[in-house]
Amino acid sequence: MLSSGNGTPQVCVFNLMRLMQGEVPYDRLRGMNPDLIDKNTPQFFAEAVNHAAWLIETYEPRVSLSDTNTVTDIENDVEILNLNTVIKES
Image (cartoon, rainbow, N blue to C red; front, side, top):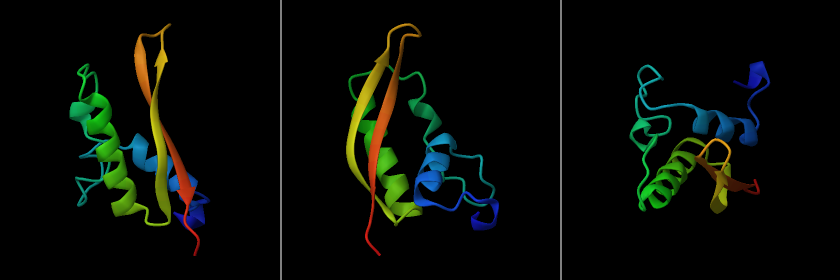
């Protein structure tokens, strides 16, 4: 990853959030849970945040999650999970 220029903590977190579980051979848990896609329940936000926090803690220890919220895109009728992260001091 570092040789490709995507080894910064921000890029690694971005890539983690774009992956879906099952896409990485030999590491099938890495990535967001695809069961959360199109899930329109009151528990969606809590489940998505818990899963994202677990991913970040497990796969990107250089970063901590500082704040989360959802943004509603009314035009496309979707909710977007917004994660604010902080790079830990080394």
